[in-house]
Amino acid sequence: MRSDKQSRTPMGLKIAAGLGLAFLHLPLLLIFLYAFTTEDKSYQFPPPGLTLKWFAVTWNRPDVWEALGLSVRVASISTVVALVLGTLCAAAVSQTRFFGRETISLLVILPIALPGIITGISLRSAFNLAEIPFSFWTIVLGHATFCVVVVYNNAVARFRRVSGSLIEASMDLGADGFQTFRHVILPNIGTALLAGGMLAFALSFDEVIVTTFTAGQQATLPIWMLEELVRPRQRPVTNVVAMVVVLVTFLPILAAYYLTRDGDQISGQGK
Amino acid sequence: MTAAAAPGAILPGRGGLGGALSDAFWRNPKLLLFVMLTPPLLWLGIIYLGSLFALLIQSFFSIDEFSGLVVREFTLKTYGELLRPSNLDIIVRTVTMAGLVTIASAIIAFPIAYYAARYAKGRWKAIFYLGVMLPLWSSYLVKVYAWKLILAKEGILSWIFAKLHLTPLIDGWLALPVVGGNSLSVSPTGTFLVFVYVWLPFMILPVQAALERVPTNLLEASADLGASPRQTFSHVLLPLALPGVIAGSIFTFSLTLGDYIIPQIIGTSHLFIGMAVYAHQGTAGNIPLAAAFTVVPVVIMGIYLWLAKRAGAFNAL
Image (cartoon, rainbow over all chains, first blue to last red; front, side):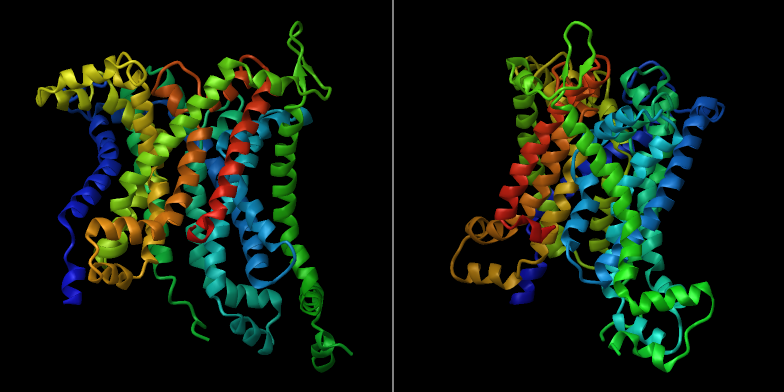
C-alpha cells in the first residue's frame, strides 16, 4: 500500500511542474530560432524566413570580437584570483576552528548577497575618492571580488569531506606540508576547484551590473549587448551573439555539474 | 618541551627554505592560518568593505545646488531629500514590485520544487536539477533579451493570442490604469513577468532543499488521520517548507530591489531604486543622493534578513 501511494504522482502537480519548467526554458529556445531569422528590422514572429547569413556578418564584426576578447581576458584573470583567494579562505575555514570563522563566511558571501548595484557604485565611488582611472584592472577588481564566493562554496563543501586523517597519515609518512598539499589535498579537491573555477568564469563572463560602474568606456560582451538592448541597431547580430553566449555559458555549467556529481567518491571517507 | 615541538626532537629538521617553512607551519598552526587568511581578508576587507564605507561616507555629504559640486561636510540633508514625495514613490514602487515578484515566484516554484524533491528519481532528478541550473546560470542579459523578443508588439505572445482570437484580452489588460501601457514591453506587467522569469530559479533551489527534508511519513500520518490533501498541504507541508520559501524570498526580494537593467529595458519610464541610483550617480553627478538611495535596499534587506533569521530560514540555505 505504502509504495503504491508514493509512486502515484498527482496529475495536477505533474502539469504544474511541467509548465514551470517550460516557462523556464522556452524563452531560451526562442533565442536559437531568432538567430536564423531573415527579418532585420523588427522582432517579428513567426520569422518570415530562415538564413545563415547573420553568422557570417557577426563573424566579420571587429567590435564583437573586441568585446569578446576583453570579456575572456577579464574572466580568466578574475577566475585565477578567485581560485587562489577562495581556496585559501575555504581551507582556513574548514580545516581549523578560530574566532570569527562565521564572520569570514559572511564577508565572502556579502558581495553576492547585496544587490550588484551596491557593489558597483561603492567600487566606483572608491575609485573616484582614490582617483584611480578606469582600466582593465578596475573591471578585474570588481569581478574577482564576487567570484571568490563560488570557488569558496565549492571548495568548502569538498574540504568538509576530505578526511583529516589522510593529511595526518601523509605527515606521518614523512611528507612535508607542501608535499602533502601537492600529492594528497590537491588531487582530492581538484575537481571541486575546477568546477568552482568554471562557475566563476561563467559568472564573470556574464556580469553586467557591476561592470557598468567599473568599466569606464570599455565594452565587455555583456556591456555590448546592453547597449544593443537599450538602443537596438543591429538586431540580427545581437540575435547571433545572444545564441553564442547561451551556448558558451551552458558548457562550463554542464561540465561543472558532471565534475562535482561524482564527488561522493572521495578517498578516506567513512572514517 | 611542548607536544608541538616533539616531532622536531625525533626527526632532524628539513633542509632548505621550503622545508623550514613547512616545519614552521607544523609547529605553529596559527602562523599557517594567518598566512592562509591574510590574502583573502586583505582583498575583501580593503577592496570590498573599504568601498562600502566610502559609499556610506558619501551619503552624508551633500551637493551644492549652484555649482553642482560635492560638498565634503557631514550633513543629513541628502537623507532629507530622500523623503521627498517623488523619491518615496520610487521606493514604494520598487518594494511593491519586489513583494509581488516574490509571491509569484513562490507560487510557480513550489510545484517544480515539490515534484523534484518527492517524485523525481534517478535520471529525472538529474534532469530537474539541470533544468533549474541551466536557466539560473545562463546569461542574465540574454534572458532579458529573450523577453524583449517575446513581449514585442510583433512578437510571439501577440501572435499566439491572435491565433487564439484572444487579442482583445491583451488590449483590455493593457488599457487598465496601473498595470497597462502602450504594449506589453513598455508596461509594468512586462517588467513583472521578466523579473519573475529571471529570479525564479533562485526560489526553486531553497524550496526544494527544504522539501527534501520533510519526512514522507509525516504526510502519510496526516492522511491516515483523515486530513484531505488540501489540509495536509496547509497544515503539514507548507509550515515545514516555509523556511525554504523565506530563504528563496531573500534572493528574489533582494535581487528585484537592486536591479536597474530590467525596468530600464522592459517597462515604463517610472524609476525604480536601481535606476534612480544609476541616474543620480551618472548624468546628474549627485553621488551623495545616489549613495543615500543605495542605503534604502540595504536597510530593507537588513530588516528582512533579521525577520528571516527569526523564522529559521537560514537553516534551509
